Amino acid sequence: MTAVNQKTFKSEIYQTRNMTKIAVLGVLAFIIMFAEFPLPMFAAFLKIDFSDVPALLAGFSMGPWAGIMVEVVKNFLHLFKSQTAFIGEAANLLTGILLVAPASMIYSAHKSKKTAIIGLLAGTVIMAAGMSIANYFCIVPLYQKILNIPTQAVIAMGSQANARIIDLKTLVVYGILPFNIIKGILLTIATALIYKRLSPLLHR
Picture 1: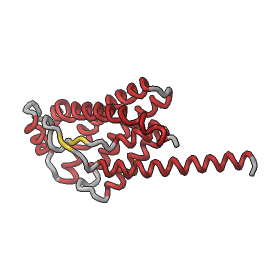
Picture 2: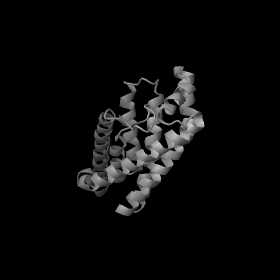
Picture 3: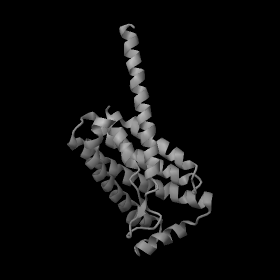
């Protein structure tokens, strides 16, 4: 076997291993999605889960594209159980990408504990801001257009948790934005606690 063939062979093995890891992490993320729970200070439809952690692990160990692919696999599997005409899966995918892509890009530029935390916090800010905009202009209105769920009904759910929520704008400001910040912080803590321990396995 020539040097070129050996290099190609090793590259193919590396790619196959990475795709296997992505598939496994994607399935794991899909399973974790079902272990969701609400926070009492937010509307009942806003629930925390840690399914973005496997995507963050993939992004940190194999690069941003791997983290994004884990998000794709997770939400593709969830399509078969969708009760939201795929709106929920699209929103979940966008949330994951907005968090995972910047976090793993910053970490990949210079791998250290400090850049990992900076990346995760930056991803949290981008995700929280991005999902606030997306919910205001797209996601919440889509529930009314496609599923005939009145926007006012969604706002009313928010009002039950926080009396300051009276319209879509305040739902975003007092509900969706702080919820996603808290979610990002919890994901940051979880990823920081387990990544180093799992790093040898992820890089094998």
